[in-house]
Image (cartoon, rainbow, N blue to C red; front, side, top):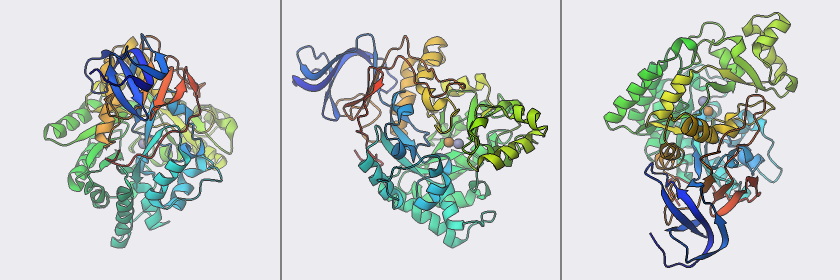
Length: 503
Ligand code: CU
Ligand code: ZN
């Protein structure tokens, strides 16, 4: 792969190139012209405006965070530092059923965590959102899923605990069509949350069928990740079959100590579906804790009977992450409130919500380390952060997911190979979500690149200090431009809205 070109905008010299396919790495220089990779090979005869020696470093495709909740964040804080500093060059937003349209419904539900600057005006549908991304130009690329919860709220208002009328299903389907026409990559549900938890399989399949018509992805925070894990996976597979969508199981896990190890069953089900030719994959963040709305934890009976989607968790396993009206509660365990207030865990949690406002988020320790490794090593799994970078003690996954896998799980523990890990972070998600020209280090592809040191890369974000960037990841390049250089954000705003299948 030599080249006749002798002048580039950028050359990364002497690195070990992992191309995102999962294959063997290659010692090569990488040449960039404009927003594209234009040569991979021996470029010793060529010059460049920016000539950067990366000897000893890995050069990989930019990471694609397939499970992002930064829909509003990319507009509110366009540097998106928690993402870019850990090598993420594209986010797929709209997960767990929470999307960006219709605007008023979306803003009421999710926008409240992030204050949009005055120049960002309310947008009209997904077409409007993607145009707004192109206008604001965050530091990374943004692809979007259409979120079911948002549409159901919009269609059915306060009357959620019933099935939708035909008109209401049509209303939801219309928004999915708008989104897919605009270039959305698929349709998402969050079936432990309000109001998705009231929806039936048939309702979801009816709406998802619109996305299936565009070969979209159906991503789901499934109805139960605990005792009902298998039934919930079954539902996702049925919806995939009925709708014609490919299926993505969000943050694949077995939640609650009683259910640890059940991941073997869900993996078997995914394997069986894949053997039959279905396109079924999953995503994962590399921690034994999750993070979610405290309201959802209560609604699912996680502190009482554990029959809901989270299983049974203890008060000491829950730590307040984000509590807008009572920031002093952030970082404290629910158990500490139980002691202080002399209440049972459920009542203490309700009191925190009553005082803290509707949008109280918690970190919840609910997984088994062995399960986490098993899921990570499985070929159906790709990587996503599920980060919610709000409040003072958010889950460290928003800052640490990718370097944690590269450092801890690849280098230190050998759970997966470096080449596999990179594939799960780049090529695999690009193929799944139909992100044309992304996800690989290839001539002609977009120059979204990460340069890191495989010997030193590691996450530094902890539960106590979650907003700490990683180390060992000096350069991040988006569309041919340095967004992070020598470990420092350049404030370059060079990201784009990505539309399904379009370069
Ligand atoms: Cu999520
Ligand atoms: Zn979720």
